[in-house]
Amino acid sequence: MHIELLLTGNEIMSGDTIDSNSSRIAHQLARLGLIVKRKVTVGDDPNLLENELEEMISRSNLVIMNGGLGPTVDDLTAEVVASVANLKLVEHPQAIQHLNDWCSKRNLAVNSANYKQAMLPENCDILPNSIGSAVGFIVQIGKCTLMCTPGVPGELIPMLDVIVERLNDKNIFSESKILRLQTFGIGESTAQQLINDKIKF
Image 1: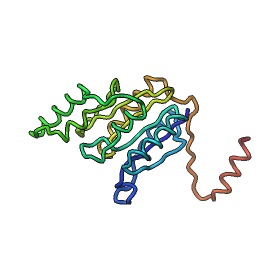
Image 2: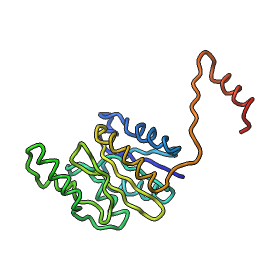
Image 3: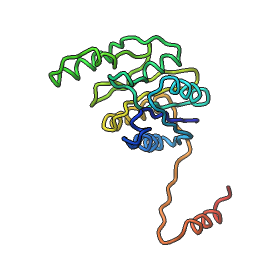
Image 4: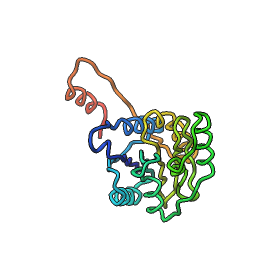
């Protein structure tokens, strides 16, 4: 099972925002015994994002793309995914309903910038966002499942439980388990030697 993460955003590249999302995603995947093999952060450049995403999809079973789902012009995820997957961007009815409900609860008028968040690759599946205005989505591209999630940590965290459920439904998990050993009072080399004495690698 080859898994990669693509983190997007100029704010991460500039150091204004610290990437904590990749750690959260990796911890949740570990619940299924899944290990992230590679992660890359790319700024809000459509050409760079498309090139990186194409490479990731070519070698991965699962790619999680984080960020770029907002209403501003530099939120490029839906457009980039549609281009890479050769899909049309269409107004998704479930995303529109979510957006209308989200704005209504806050007594806000839905504007054209908001509606950008409902323009998604055709035939994608929705990942519900219980907090923010932008839904996530899933697209199957060949052998690779691509999951796109919002970059706001408070929105991502509850969505991760949904992602784990979806991966369980797809039977994407590992039969191997991750074992963590905590030690106290011994050095790293001593701990490794104790393991070497018991396990043949």
